Image 1 (cartoon, rainbow, N blue to C red):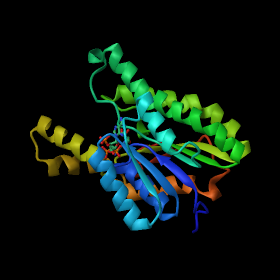
Image 2: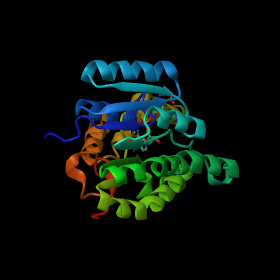
Image 3: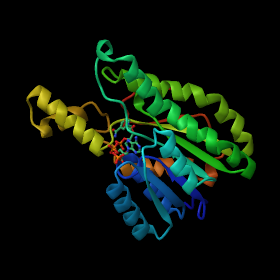
Image 4: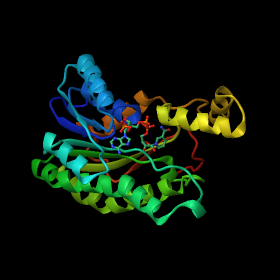
Length: 259
Ligand code: NAP
């Protein structure tokens, strides 16, 4: 299926690895020029090289922290009028409600709610004027079913979901959509890192901890980043102009609800 977005431009945040990188790679395979960002310069430059060599599109790496105003200004300077925006950043750390300081809460809201809102505000009106725009926020399965120990993430991501719901319905008249993708467990560095910690805490091998985590997934496996990238690219396609304000759960069947 031709997604009908060849020649478009996209900003993909937090994209040197994992889900962000998979989105950038898939969009690039569809012929979209991509501006990708991450904090570690060597990593984002290496990823840009890899995507450019694999696809032949223009790939611009920006080494910056997307959760800062300066970082977002650098991204927008490189790409002031994107057709596509993929919002992503690292997730807040796990912990216990009693140990979180108000500053921990402020940081989580800054990373996972204010940052995407700022980039949407900076780009959505131009998209509406140009009569094409696709915005995808990478959130989490925790928006539908909050996860114990990830309360910072549960709160900030649910806040973003509520905050953009009206705009998503206002923009669609102009062929601009805003949707959220909610990942369950995807096999990225973040997942392997958190499983290693779990194995240490429980005194078991990493392999055992991986098997225990997989046992909770009806699909019997973790999601692959390429599967995530493909779903995101479809939501960014010319065919997806009637889909807006939705929360697409990619969790291998973990959420037990019928709706
Ligand atoms: P990952 O494999 O660890 O990759 C994270 C990427 O984001 C890296 O490129 C990292 O590069 C970049 N990054 C992190 N913080 C950044 C910042 N402040 N500014 C710019 N770039 C930043 O993580 P992932 O698994 O792809 O997760 C992506 C998002 O999905 C996270 O918010 C995560 O919480 C959420 N999520 C993931 C899963 C999962 O199973 N993988 C499940 C639910 C939710 P630098 O470190 O160099 O900046």
